[in-house]
Image: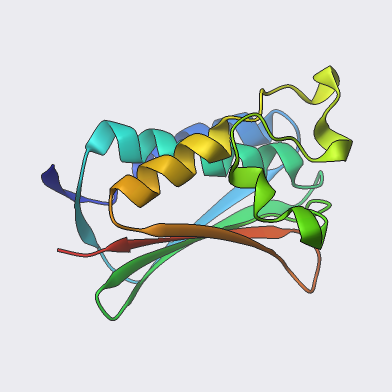
Length: 149
């Protein structure tokens, strides 16, 4: 494990590129630089899985919001979209390997249902937590908490 600043430049650049091909946008907001202990490659892939999922499901002409802030001794990352959300009874299931919400199970939507499972395992192995909730305005928010250095 190494000490690292939660990087966003490449992640946001890649997400914006992917989003603009389908008339979607990505907005990044951070209160300050936040340092955590972890494996840079694993954490980058986990965050990328969450952000790419949000970009895939947000409605056209809307934006994925990525907010990084400090909450006491925790790095708090929120990724929210303006998509259809997830049925309440399935919110915990979306982090299980190969689980796909009924509306997303057809092959047209792509994916295998392992991206969020990888993110959950990575975050947990780094001493953090990940959870999802539906937003009152519509869409889904995934919240990642990681211990700071």
